[in-house]
Image (cartoon, rainbow, N blue to C red; front, side, top):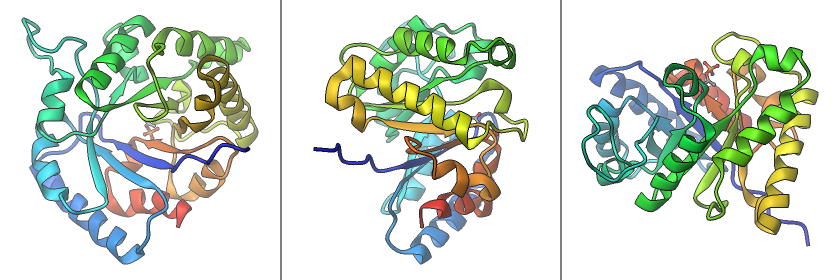
Length: 253
Ligand code: PEP
């Protein structure tokens, strides 16, 4: 029997953008989602850590979930400036992004660390969004699938399930650049990720959500979200404005 298609997830990564005044975008998004009626996808916003608690309060009873952009692997301790997954859970976060390419690059995070962060998220009862993606140089060398495969191998552990983990494929060269891979290229990478997940987790592998991320906007969302094995989007720049983000979510309406 064919596995049930996972419910898509459209997630916004606000990165280091936004302050308390950005709550107006949440309000506007909520209004648009309410007007839209039944929603066949989940909607998530991952604002900077300073806004999580306030946004959780503001989105209670709405269709918007709130998540975080990173967590530490430990539950507590002498780690100045870091935030534990348990602390995110405590203020109402539901998801946490781990292994975003900006963290892999800016903070030298490798796949082993990404796995421990995802395991911390699971320990705290959060769903981890594990990001993978090749650089432009790796793509030009024809090593995209090899890179993704190694990142998946290192970033995923045996206790990972379709419920506690979401995969996000984000080609580094497509992030914030306005450039995107062709739908054929996206299909190829997502099919390879699906195959790896099934090899590693058996039937469960068919139920993991695999998001595409990298310059998703309202004008390309229908095409990208329509690709086989694309189960939603991780959106950076276009998630900051309710109108644009709703335009992307509309690919599922
Ligand atoms: C991201 O950083 O996760 C991302 C996808 O950014 P953008 O949509 O701006 O390319």
